[in-house]
Amino acid sequence: MAIKDQGVRDQRFSPQELVDAEKGLVGRRIYIDPEIYQNELERIFAKCWLYLGHESQIPNPGDFMTTHMGEDPILVVRNSAGKVRAFLNVCPHRGNRLCRADRGNAKSFTCSYHGWSFGNDGGLAGVPNLNDAYFGQLDQDLWGLTPVTQLDSYKGLIFGTFDSEAQPLCEYLGDLAWYLDVFVDRCEGGIEIVGEPHKWLVPCNWKFPAENFAGDMYHAQWSHLSAITTGYGSTANRNNWTGNIVSPGNGHCVVAVGPNDINVPPVPEIEAFEASILPQMHRRLGPRLSRINPIFGTAFPNFSFNRAPAHTLRVWHPKGPEQTEIWVWAFVDKAAPVEVKEAMRLASLRTFSASGTFEQDDMDNWQGCTETCRGVVSRRMQLNMQMGLGHDGYSEELGAWASEFRLSESNHRRFYQEWARMMG
Image (cartoon, rainbow, N blue to C red; front, side, top):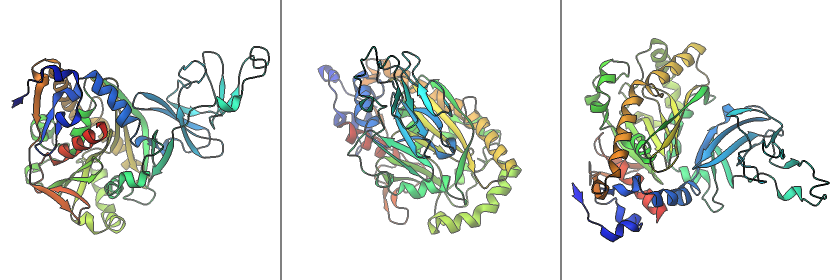
């Protein structure tokens, strides 16, 4: 354990001092410092491509859903012409939240404060007392909703960024695209969201759950021992699993087991379906699937996905340095039979929801890691992320930097290396 007496330097922010990816050391101030958090909102969440939702959630003209990009409220809507748009969910008159519903269908949105209304194309459609109070002089074309600067989708996953100079989404995802395909495009028709999202607050910094899903297989045998002993997670013989921790670039990270390692819940309907689609998966995904089997991961900075033992998409919404709002959606293969979809939904509830057997273990860890950052001395600690240091390298076969052993913190180092690059 290393403790640096930073003295006066505690008042300054230097990403290079706080993250040393080459040595595998991370300073704990990055999880608790309000100044660092505000810089994250500006330099990461206002610039990265962020996950907004799935197209299956807004299939019809007028369908909408609300979400966040960092702490900015966002309205995602399929307008009357059928085009998906995204805007700040903020009325430009006094800045009140415009749409209060989580989702629905609407031709227009009216602010509850002064009644300004907007079409589902974002344009200002109506202003009370326009002719008398404003003397007909308000230029309505200038006061529509603020659009998300760039909007794009990949296999039904909708992403947005406020950075006009951000690289195209396909370049940002890079080789992560193939790994995402294993989750969202393994069957004809892709996936769809089932049920409503689960949302809850956890007193932790957003980076702890993001890094956990980015590459932490190490904790499972300890933190999830009780859940594992129930046998529900198909985790028997976990110590015999093979696989790699892989990072396709741009801070994106994936955990993968070997092609023959079991990673589905012991539910007859799901087991039979997974066996039935295996030939189709190999045809669609190619020879790489015979080498590696992705089971969970994180697209930098805060979009995670898993399929062992549950199928969920999740976003870690930052709500201050010590609070994260977790949003989780269960997803299923669109081509799956109804009974399989229901079994997958229930598997998600039982394992990775607010009351899930695995999720509760994780939340306790993330809260504890955040709370201990409050101490003056403990905040000066450098965390050890050195597992597998020097034992990873780029694999052309996998299209990613890959660890030599199935347990490694190589993804942690690459996640925080990207964090430091963007914060710098």
